[in-house]
Length: 282
Length: 328
Image (cartoon, rainbow over all chains, first blue to last red):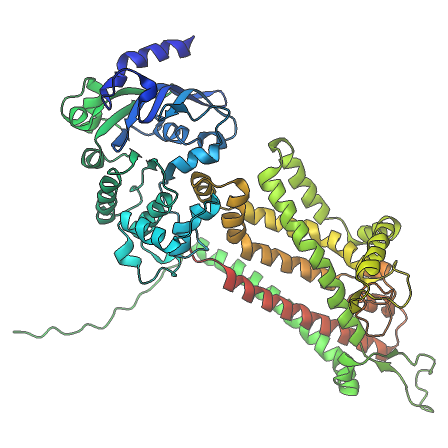
């Protein structure tokens, strides 16, 4: 009962069509879309009724205070949520119109299409830079024979190629924190995802490295959809085309509003969004 | 313009609090005591075995004869003491049986640890971990008895099969088809004794793989096996080797189980299915009760040899661990 009420509230709050601007027939929508998504951990209702659209080749920032379900939400988008014991979900997540939670879908194939970069830079410790980039191809048993090209291409797109091209056989751990994170981005790109999820990718990095990653994100958006969780308001305003603001009132997290980044930062519809982006709470 | 003088670095002084000083004293004492004990044991072994090494020299390690001239009366100088002591086959036996044990134990332990940590249902996880720790605490005597009473019949079947199919390979050939008390069967029992320890260590190490790295494998479209192969196993390699060395230490020094399982024969034998064998530790246990003074010195010398072998194995182990630790 409570669930349903919340569902209605959030759909009132969220005008799905504002984000991305795709009107009408939803099955023809290109990109990632969630429809009243809920998440639970055991009995704990963590996220309620989130409906959002992430159009192709855009960057969307997910903002909101800690514990409002942003990370839970992002892990729902590539079926990483279900790795947590007792985790459950409701609603649907559509990638180019087809439900990624459909029983016929292989979660591993979904994760190939929807990649993820984590908070802490985490190159595989026992592998070289080159092996790190190619790790996904090996893990997913993809048939590729132009490995050298893939390494160069992915490292270039991640903005790391010039710095490491002469030491591809060095350990991934020998790089600086910012370089490691760009290596992780290159590693995600090697399996050619359509969507890249980034969970606070810069929170462990210095400002210089953060800027490099932000440039990388903007360049990535020329080809793929990027969804980034961030606590850094400047980052959200610099890097994203759209922003979605999440909040919790002690219960499950929900979506307050989603709109173009400019609107969220200059003239949001909800006063709580204004307070948050101006740093009044959170 | 004035020249800037390079200052001499200032001296740093440290003031330890009372609690710090006391704790420092306790841990230092603890460390020194264990070092002292090790030194005392080593010097006792060296001192008591000196006579044996003086008399038999290198032959003590390479020779194949153990004869105690026990019938000579004490103080009877009318005929010389014809005792000959050497433990070559026992050293080889120790290594052979321990190697067989580790060949079985390492894959079993890795498999078991991976199962418990990544595949076992959560509901039985705790039970399995508790059982494993319990198994590690079972006295080796029990394993030895189980080995004789129960396992031998299975072991003999495996040994027969090995001999049938692979008998053309020298190590699997036999002189007599009596597989029951062979190093192979004893090695299997020894493996069952080692498995709980190595599995326990391996499981612990695997469980510390950063969740982040495993998640990354999944996020790249990898399977569970992919994550285990490319992250969990490389990450845990050095720890698993350390655990295996712990198990190897136990296998090399095992006394009672081998004492029950093997016929001690002072003959070099590489035929692991043949019913000859023995190891240093069980030989010492077997001979000690009725030993003459001179024989006791030889037995202590055997102990010293075992001590040195274990020390070398441990040094090699820590070296391997250091070299295989991934630098993240």
